[in-house]
Every structure is written in C-alpha cells, then in structure tokens.
Image (cartoon, rainbow, N blue to C red):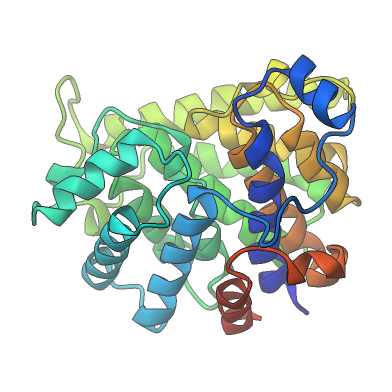
Length: 330
C-alpha cells in the first residue's frame, strides 16, 4: 500500500489548492474559480505554503531520528529544522507569526519551553503533524507525546497540543483501515480517555502557566475545547450539506481544534472522493490552505497515492522530498 505517500502528497495537494483562496471571501472565490473552486495546478511548480514546508521539516526530522521516539532527540532535531525553515529564503508564503516568534527564540538558543508562544493554539500546531501519524511501530503513548511535542515547540496552548494529537491519530487510524464514519466516535473516545493525561516526559514543565493549578487541569482545558468542536462536527454530519461553507459549521480553522474539525468535515462529506474533499476545503471562508491540507492528509491516508491525479505529482513543489518521506513509511 502507498498510504503514507498518499497522505504526504495529499497534504501538499490540499495546501497548494487552498493557497490562492486563503484570504478571499466565498463570493470572490466563486467569482474567480466557479462554485467548485480551483481544480488543479496553478504554475509550474505548483507552489505550496508554510504548511507543507513545516510538514516536511517534521517528516525529515523523524527520518533523521531513525524512528527513535526520544523526546530530547526529537526536540533538538525539530528545533534545528524549524529554525532552518524560518531562516530559509523560501519562507515567503505568509507564515504564521507564532511560528516565526518561537523560531526566533530557538535561534537565539533559548530552551524550547521558553521560546514557545504559551498562549497560542493557532493551526500551525497541527498543520504539520501528519508525519507523526504515519511513523510505524510506535506505542500510542509515544505517538501522542511526539504529536504534542512538535506542537509545543511553537504553540504552548493545551488545545493546540490536544488537537495535534487527535490529528496524528486520525491519520494513523485511517492508514490502518478505520472506516471514515467511525472517526468522530473514535476521536471523542480518545478525548475522554486522555482528558487529564499530561505527557511530562515530553512536555516537562510546560503546564506551569499563570492560572493553571496542575498538569491535569492544563491538559483538561485543551481536551474540553476539542470535545466542544467535535460536538459541532457531529451536528454538521447529522444534517450534511456539501454545498455549504464548512467553516460555518465547525469554524474558520485559524485555531488548531477548528482546523482539525473543519478538515474532518470536508473529508467526511466526500470520504470516497479525495479531490472533492480538498476542493471543498479550498472553497471556504477561513484558513483554506490549512483546512484543505489536513483534508488531503486524511484522504491520502485512507486511499493511498493512486487516488490523486497522476499528473499532479509532476507539478507539485517539493515532490522529491514528499516522495522520500512517503517511501520511508510505506
């Protein structure tokens, strides 16, 4: 199976498809592209955004680590790679300020727990976590810890951590064959089971923030916000409307839990049609590239590389790097 490659390329395809619509309203998107939105490559190469760039930083860091789930090793590797991304001349795709501020702190040599932006739960926490869901052979505890750590390097808010864990497990479960219709229940069950779990081995003392009494209370805040947005997802799926703006149901996606839920909605509206799923993400009033990016990662993990138009692979930016990452885990 080529589900790891399908997920990595799907991430990039959704990102590239949603990039030109990210800061447009629905009326302007439809005026420019029609009701279905962009339908394929624009330019050669077909440019992605910081979502894919940082996703590759996470993926290549995992490959460099050799699959070793060591918090210290992964934190050092990812910190170095995030700084390299921040300082690259190719970092010209409207990157998020949270990531840039945190990377600036890392570049100064500050410990990541000091450099992170403690109050931020922006979608940058989980737009890049897909590779953590693709690595084979890890325990659930290590996968959860790594998913939260890669988020915590830049986004220190507990909801960013919890949403990143759920995003990684969504990718993992789909790759392993879970039926899409079972996803909302599985995510809810995990959120309840993990509600007071704090991964101290991975996160150290990150929980020590103003107004937080305990690591359990810190974790619960993030999981409760994720459970609330899963309620909105359930309501949208109870009366699905594929033609409606998905952001109206589950949020605009600028924050982590909404990016997860709205991407899931796009995927679950079209579980058998990956291209329509990412086009639905691109035609949205919110953070369209991140929404479509995650929807593409989910669809690719479910269907594999063959589900995407073959011609797209010849046009997408960073295709050799995406292929190497997918091949490492296929």
